[in-house]
Every structure is written in structure tokens, then in C-alpha cells.
Image (cartoon, rainbow over all chains, first blue to last red; front, side):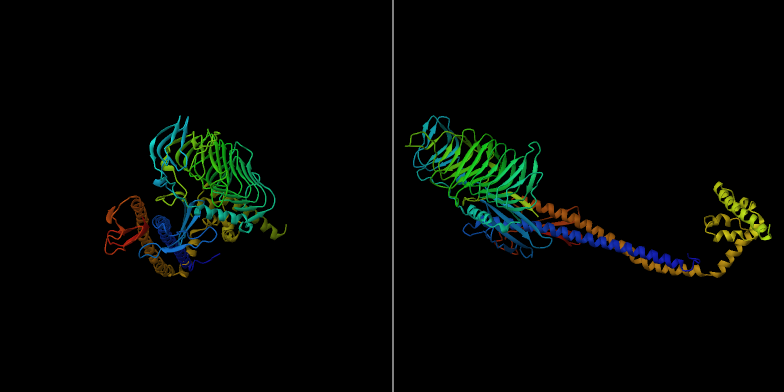
Length: 438
Length: 198
């Protein structure tokens, strides 16, 4: 205890000095933080525009300079381009352009800190030479059977024969009609990547050696899984949706089934065996690749890309925009059967030729999108969109001319929603179908 | 009974009485002169008050008991104290004032600096908002030319489209570049500049 008050004022002064210094310190620190935050905000905004400009520049050069190979590599080896993107400024951007299952995956990263990246998936807007409700190049004339109706714009190389069907369209008959050109490179590169992954378990976070069942009780823990056996992703409780995962990479040497009330987003599933999506399963913005077959049944729904030699959509399964079904090189077989009851929104591309390859659209099926086929199409259902093919097929017993159509072709209901894979070199405009920032 | 006990017992008893009485008296709000009347003279003479002041038991009530002291006692104590600290407080206060002013001066200047910077920060935040919204507008519009605009009578916005139509611009810059600069109107200090390809 202080017995005398001598020097107490000094103690007060020291205490006040300490408090005042502390206040000054706090204020200065606060100011520095605020200033730093403002500078960082400005840089963040500029970085966003830098990264976005990288995407625009890449798309511009892809669009304008057709002759140049704009790809910066494949999914296996990639060397991004570095560019100081603005005039007399030092903002640097790193751009990579890769094939992604027929689409383009463009990634642009602003290099100034704080780093900002934008990744987009770009599809094409259908070129003018594809915007015909029917383009047909066949050695036999088209036979329009009872019940068939064609609307819109039609180009054929031979005069059609009417057997009860009707055409309510601008009909252009030209012997030199050609199907729009296609290049298979965008799909080839992606399939090569999937095949590489299916034989490289070391590329994954985990390699498992027994059949795997993932359910709400046993959720998927790793993002990249290689299973040397079958995979089942299932939620048996059909009343409540189970969010099984996002951004997953699953490879299986056997078959894969996604069923029950399971929901998956932005996943890539590849398998040597068949892949099935059943029940109320929902798979969105994803890529499914199988060396054998893909089947969607019941009330399942899907959006994304399906690649397999044998693809079947049946019952009340639906596909939503933007979706693509692909059979073609390097796959040697291509059978696509649509036996669905609800309308599906997708593009169907079959570039396999000869043999038993086919596209079959059954009576109940209704599709909105673009169909491009190098094999005869069986059209019994309804198409709202554009179809390019080299013939139709209907088994009538008469083998002299099987170029028969009994289905309906209408113009698309929502043409602005259509987008196509970048296999058509005449594509002039792009459409961003997925945008991701990080 | 031995003599020493005779003198101790009443003293011990009355000590407790005095303490208890003083507490209760203060509690019910009796004045100090009234309290002093009830304390036996013996305890006043025998230095009871001094005993209470240093006793840990009674230190809480030291003030109350102190009030029972006679006027002459307290005056003597104060005079003695003043003699010991003669003129000290003035010097002490003067030194304290000097130190305080030394400390407070930068503090006050920091506050005013901070306030001015606060205004600058607010201005910057506003400039960022303006630049961003202007850039979005420019990127959305199909055709836009170089222009200048004054906003809120505080900011000058310069929109420059680098499309090669002027001699100081690069030719064949594709895709064209849009540059938004926000300046403070009064002194034309550049606050923010954003660039983007259109």
C-alpha cells in the first residue's frame, strides 16, 4: 500500500500515456487495415476483369483464327499461355484451353495477388448451316408415312414421296446437299483422357479393391476414387433426397449404379462396365463415360454429357439442358435408343457408321435439341429441333427402300436455349454453359 | 481479581461495543457528533481511534470512526501533512501537464489525420462502386465511345475505348479494351482505374 501520495501524478501520466499510445496504435492499425483492404478490393476487382478478359481473348481467337490449333494441350499435358492482356499495363493472365467432352474448358487466371481464376465451359450456338429442321442426304428418296409431319425448313437431295405424311415447311431439294462438316477431335481427346485414367489408378486419391456401396450411412469421403470393382451409390429412402457429393471423380473397372434418391453435382464417372442411373437419382452438370453402355431409367434425371457405345434412355428418365449424348470415334459402336415418356432436352450425336449402329426414337419419345447422325435414324416419336442424317430406317419388310419416317419434326420451342458441342467447324458464336470462379 | 484484569475486562468489552455502535450508527445515518457522544472518554484519550485505523477489523469503518475525532486533532494532522508536501502539487501538476501535452499532441494530430484518411477511404469506396458499375455498363453496351462524366460533383469518370481510332491508341487491338478511370474532381487525382476486354 502506498503510504504517501508523492509521485502519484507521474503514475497517472504514465497510465494516460499508455492508454493514449494504445489508442493511437489501434487507430493506426485500423487505418492500415482499412487501406490494405481497399487496395486489395481494387486489385480483386481488376483481377476479376483480367481473368474474364482472358476468357474473352481465348474465345475471340478461337472464333476468328480457325486455322490455328488454339488448344493449349490435352487434359494430360497442358501448357497454358501467359499474356499481358492490357495495353501498357502489367496485369498478367494465364490461359488454358482444353477439350472437354465436345465442349471447351477455358481457364483463365489473373496472376497478380490475390489470385483470381475463372473456369468456363463453352458450347457453340448452332451455326446457320445446321439450322434446318431436316437435312437429309440419302441415296433413296424419303418416304413420309401416315402420321408423319415435318415443319420448318427442310433440305433434301431427292424429292420426298408422300404416303400419308405431310410437309408444312420450306422444302429445298438440291442433289448436292451435304451434311454439315464435323470434327471428332474434341471428343477424341476427352475419351483418350478417360481411357488413360481407367488404366492409371495412381492418378486417384484412393484405390479400392472390393465392391463399394455408398449411401447416407456410408458417404463418399474422397473426391477421387478408383475402384477395382463395382460401385453402387444409393439412397434407399426414396422420400428424402441425399446429396451424395459434388466435384467427384469416380472410376470403376466394373459397373456403376446410381439409384434411389441420390443427388450428385458436377461429377465425372467412368467405367469399363455399364453405368446405370435409376429410380429418382439426379445427376447434374456431369460427365458419364462407359466403355460398355449407359442406361437411364425410371424417374432419374441427368444433365451433362453421356459417352458410350450403347446408350438407352427409358421410362420417365429426363435429360435437361445442356446435355449431349455421343457415340462416335474412337468408339467403334454406336447405338442410341430413346424410349422415354417425358420430353428430354439434349443433343444426340452418332458418328459411327455401318453395322448395327443406329439412333432409335420410339413412339412415346419427345426430344428438343439437335440430332446429327451418320447412321440411319428411326424416328417414330417427336423431335423439336434440327436433324441432320443420311437416312431413316423403318423395318417394313420391303428392302428396296427403308428410308421411311413416321414421326414428327417441329421447330424448337425454345431455340435460344440450344447449344451444340464444338464439333461443327462453322460455329461462329459461343455460349457459356458453366461458369465457375475461385 | 488481579489489578491488571480489572483494568482489561471493561476495556475489551467496551471496544466491541464501540465498534458495533459505530457500525450501526453509520448504518442508520446518525451524525458524527452524535456518535462521538456515545463513545466513552477513556477510549478517546487512550487512542482508540488510532487503534481502529490500523486494525484490519475496523478499517472499513475508519472514516466513520475518524469523524469522532476532535477538531484540534484533525487540524494538527493536516497542517503536518501540508508542511511535508509544501509546493509539491504545483510542480507535479506542471510536469504532468507537460507530459500530457507531449502525449496528447500527436494523439490529436493522429485523430485529425485519421479523420481525413477516413474521408479518403469513403471516397475510395465510392469511387470503386462507380468504376465497377460503369465498367459493367460499358461491357454490356454494344457500342460505346470515349467519354467523360461528372458524378455527384465529386468524381470525374473517363471512359476510354482502345479500338485504334486515335493516334495514341494501339492499332489492331482485338478484342477492344475498355478503360475506366475515376478521378477526384477538385484536384484531378486518379482514384481508381479498371481495364477489361470488351
